[in-house]
Amino acid sequence: MIQVSQKLKVMKINLLNYLKIIKEAKSDLKPKLLITTVEKVKRQQDFTDLTKYLLYKLTGESFGVTEFDFLVFMSQVLFSSMSRGGGYDQFIRWLHAWEGMSGSLSADGTKYIIGDDGYGNITVGYGVDIFNGGFAERFAAAGYPTSVGSEVDNEFVDNLEKEEINEKIYK
Image 1 (cartoon, one colour):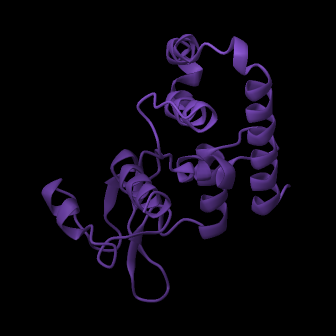
Image 2 (cartoon, one colour; image 1 turned 135 degrees about the vertical axis):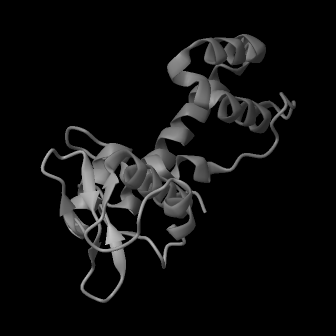
């Protein structure tokens, strides 16, 4: 697997090649047409601001974006995988395998059973710490108990886990 620093180098090389190609074709460049084309293609819509920024850097003319935060692509760099099933879902699977499940599952598999992580922390699912994570009020508001051995719907816990992960990634 390529290290993060290597992936960033590859991204930089690709970006420099992209700029070189555009610069060589500058006389034929139609920025507004390029922006419109990028906006229309669903898979490329995330690149609209990047395209506007790169055109600004190339031509000096503002197309509405004169600064760009390249960190928006960091989660793709950090959590992509060279193997099948990369990205965010792959990261979740890896995290679950690494952490292991706190407690267990109900017989039908639709509920997590609240457990103790071995250090006295009440956890559920894959590492959702009910009290130290600040989730006790959310459990109470949703009508779920917070005691060891109690059952909680998987979807509720999984959504809390995703919120916690996203908060850490995009902090």
